[in-house]
Structures are given as structure tokens and as C-alpha cells.
Length: 88
Image (cartoon, rainbow, N blue to C red; front, side, top):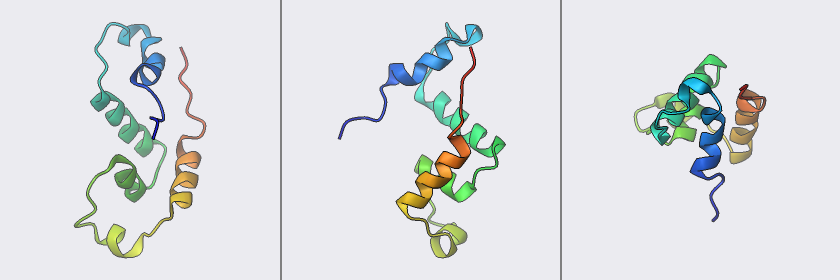
């Protein structure tokens, strides 16, 4: 399968911000931004774990009570991040 986006495409909005322009941007920075912004926008914590690939092994809620289809996860993602814009 083809990647959804390339690393340069993901970096482009960050490169437009002058304080970030000369810093080395790594995937860990993008993951941190995603996690923090998801929380700022009151996104569901279980969905965030699933999207980030975190283990739900000991998460009773995620294992037994919080079941989501791919379509539901996409709908929740669109509600939380659908209007994400980078102003430069």
C-alpha cells in the first residue's frame, strides 16, 4: 500500500513557522503534537491510544466496553481533527 503522506509533506507546515524552520523535525515531534492537540480538542483517550498504536492490554474500558468500527474511528478523527489548520 502507498503511504498516506510523505515525511516532507508532513514537515512542510512546521517548516513555514520561523521558530521551527531550522530545527530537525522528527516523527516523535509529530506524535507529541498529535497527542497534545488531541487532548486539547477533548478527543477520546481510547481512540487516541488506538490511533497511536499504544497497547490497550490492561485497559479494561478499551478491552471490554469501548468497541469501535473503522468507520466510527474515522468519524471521531474527522470530528476532532477535521478542521486542523496551520497558520503561517
